[in-house]
Amino acid sequence: MKRAWAHVMILGLFAGVAAAHSPSPVSLEIVAPDGTRFQEIPVESRDGALRSYLQAERGARYRLRVRNTGNERLGLVIAVDGRNIIDGRKSELTRDEPMYVIGAWDTQDYAGWRASLDEINEFYFTDWKDSYAEAFGDRSARGVIAVAVYRELQPESPPPPRVMQPAPEEDAGRSAGNAAPATKSDARARRDESVGTGYGERRADPVREVAFVAESNADSRHIIKYEWRETLCRKQVIDCGTTNRFWDESRLGFAPPPPRRGRQD
Image 1 (cartoon, one colour):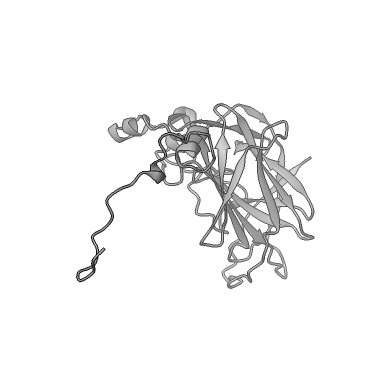
Image 2: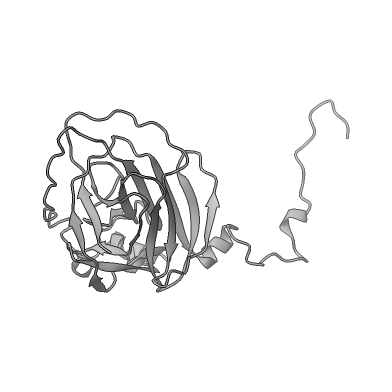
């Protein structure tokens, strides 16, 4: 099954603020290569994005499985640890970034960093020091999988797709294997035990380039914060059975604030 990806065309005139659509026209889950779902815990969001925690497993390969639940094709800007998965550049989830295009009622898996029109390097959960983003010193969105969904703007005459250009040498042109030497601050970051996504093995994953003009604003956003199990336990996102029935902090008595003046208790 071939997957289409497209660079968004800058037309000079934007579509204006897109109308709010609820719910999202896509569903998203993180799965292993055999289709097994990783544990996901939805959380309340105050910014309109669909947010959740995900339990990462050390060394496990993973992929984003996206289902288009509507009758129109959609554009997907996908960032892992803050880097666009097509060109490796720092992402802001905007419409002018390279994006994948998913057909109406279609389901697609996005399984790695794109190396060419024919191949990817697979995603896998790893310690932050081994992550793709850390190779560029980018810690601005570590441990986050983000997808911005764009509806298509129908121009009178669609422009031809742009050809993918090589990235500047100092940014996405480098791979995780030939990153710049670590500085002192990098060395401190490499002691971080946070989770990140690695630049895994190369495998075939052919796509073709298509024309797609996105609306100016994303229809919806999906934000997934992935953590090791021990971190989710410590944050009490999941119940790991770590409470002590003989030492429940919530039941301990502490000194209350003083009563107001003129009041006798």
